[in-house]
Length: 463
Image 1: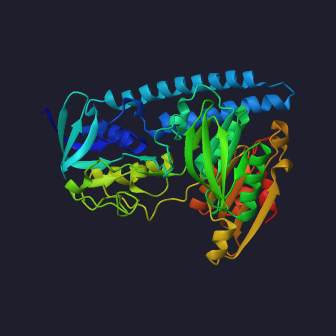
Image 2: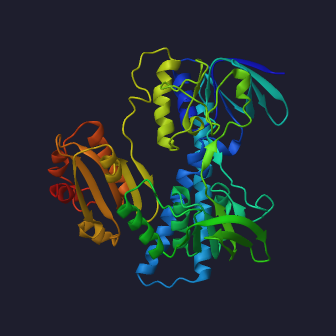
Image 3: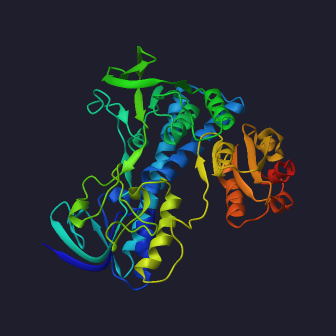
């Protein structure tokens, strides 16, 4: 058995893991980073998450815009454009995967091992490669194994050739005429939006009657109305029971309000959430404690129950965003270097979120529901995107802009933007919240014209 000794061992080549590995190696520490799949250098976001899906979102928007100019779309042109979009997505992912590998592997103090890592004890990892088992002994260990798709119990789903997770469906080469999506969470809604724009008949099945239940009722309704405008059909209180492959695809059986119904589909995407990827790590051999959903329990400094073992990214539970994984790196790096830092989960900055439907729904801070529950005294302003000149220029007039301001302080409590470029403009609001910038500063700002961000002049004038 080949044996390695290192200062820090990192399990997982995701955003936090690769960034930690690079920073530590440049500081002179020896680092071994272990990745089970050569197709996952850079993590979920680069390979099967944010970037490939946003590439498809952009491609779908292009073909959707062609319709607005009266260009005829047929089933054949939709399929051809979809294949081209998928080919570009694959090209992009391949390039980014290779780039991320070399950003770490080419460093003098860093070693990349391809294999599956699991614990032997709290300082030792066993790495199963294609040909042998390696042993890695490390003074400090960071777990960044991410999350995996949660698949509910649906009869015959394991044997079906037409059931996909959000990762697997990215390998489709043929556009499905009829796509069923189980789950109306952010992942399901994003796929519903751009498959509908590619030309698929999309039906979303939600087990209860909820839709973006954490959002304000009017905000959620605006998103639902827009998706239905794009052609997405929603079936609420529809519990998926079984699937059966057919000559043309798959038959889905659901129970809806006590009635059994069947739908003939070409493909089905199961988008019912993700769970921490810890099931085969043997963490008990290192005395690392897991939570109820299999997440690694951590303190405010991201230390596990074992002080020299940290967890970063999705595997620790909580928000599943690549930028949170990057921020986890900022918390853990000083500890690995023996430096003092006051930055931790308790002092973490307010951060925005975005769901990339068309247009994007982005939010930061409190919405009205949360502000009311918190007893905040606030004023709210809301305006239609159609009144923004740049939206008219782009023919992107769907949606709204809403902001909440605390009466006593003039500080912004939060904002909900459902608009073109919402994922960009929301970052201005996040900055204002984190830096305690008065809403008046943004209201009176001088913005380039025409832009979406200049809408802040008019929106905040309404406070």
